[in-house]
Amino acid sequence: MKPGDLIELVLDDEVLKGTLVQSPDPETIVLKLSNGYNVAVEKSRVRKTVLVSPLVEASVIKKPRQVEMRKGLPLISILHTGGTIASKVDYRTGGVVARFSPEEILAMFPELNGIANVTSRLVSNMWSEDMRLAHYNVMAMEVRKEVESGADGIIITHGTDTLHYTSAALSFALQGLGIPVILVGAQRSSDRGSTDARLNLLSAAYFIANSDFAGVAICMHETISDTSCLILPALKSRKMHTSRRDAFRPINALPIARVCYDERGIEFKGDYRKRDKKSRLGLKLFNEGLKIGILKAHPNMYPEEFSSYRDFDGLVIEGYALGQLPINAVDEKTNIHSRNLEELRLLCAKMPVVMSSQSIYGRIQLDVYSTGRDIKAAGVLGHLSDMTPETAFIKLAWLLSNHSKDEIRLLIAKNLIGEIAERSEKEAFLI
Ligand code: ASP
Image (cartoon, rainbow, N blue to C red; front, side, top):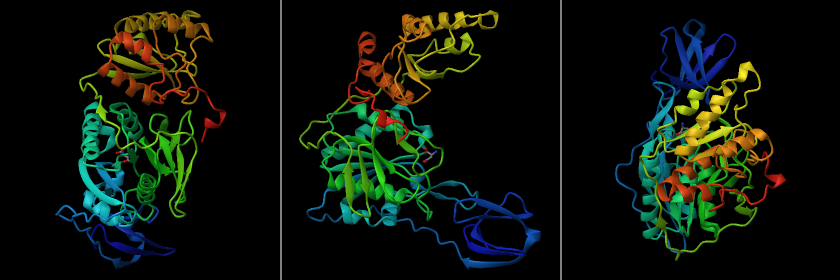
């Protein structure tokens, strides 16, 4: 039997069924079970091995799919960038690695063609942890191509780890976007029975085809079951769980809408920008050479942590709660904290330094404690902002790419396109 074959191992007390995965140890057999977990069994425990079905390689369609345009259906363009949604399990290693082509993904979810005329194109084939500012520019330019060729909406398939950075980046880069651009990922690869890719993709397509929403948003599972998806604000969402299918949650905001694909229902939760195909899309891209850091406050901080960013163009700090940092010398154990403050002052003199909160929810308020006041007096920006650290990072990168330092001081904590909520709603906590 070969890796990838579906087999049964008959043991004394149980029968294990799963896909054979290459084992690193000649004395054990490794099976990938249907729940996605791997189990290793010592060969000496196996009484009998049964081949249930041999591995069937997914056929690779070489030619790009010819799209037959059906009248009355909107045109959706899917741009693929990689991630788990485009991957399958490699049974040699048991890990998720090998990638599907765009055509294979379409072939796997044929229902998409009932919702819209769908075209599909590969932009990149990468894990999202490798994304850089340059990739946001490529995606923005690819979106512009699709807008110019008449797409009614765009789905971008993407790895989930940094999907919320990309959604924020595209929101800033795509100025005057008159159609929906929906980012979709998956926590389970598309070849698995438990994949969330199907519902996420179908819900995104259904939402584009049956609503008048315009702008960038995220479409991911609302719960751990295949019941509904949420359309989430591109600038105010975050991956809040390492592996659950409902990992993406809105932060300091409500979801834009709920899509119940099986019932063909869309329920809007609040105001949104309406579609306008005549709107002129202008790109405001990122300066790809920028160096921006994110520094997280923690107990026992040293001044060198601050000074290590001296040669950077900008810094986001994840302070404690309202925006605190260890800068008070309260006894001999904390004398070093006055040097933290000194280094912070030096950084602020050289570059924009923006405070965000590691509490994730809530607003930066630097006036409440004297610590905050000292931080503000040192030149730290971001007072009253409720941006996530990720959105603050992207906004700072975009401002540094398109505005002067003086403008940045004014614009960073001002709501430009929905990245800062005007009011803190109590319902917008732990949704
Ligand atoms: N590490 C992967 C990525 O972000 C995870 C995923 O795709 O969900 O590309």
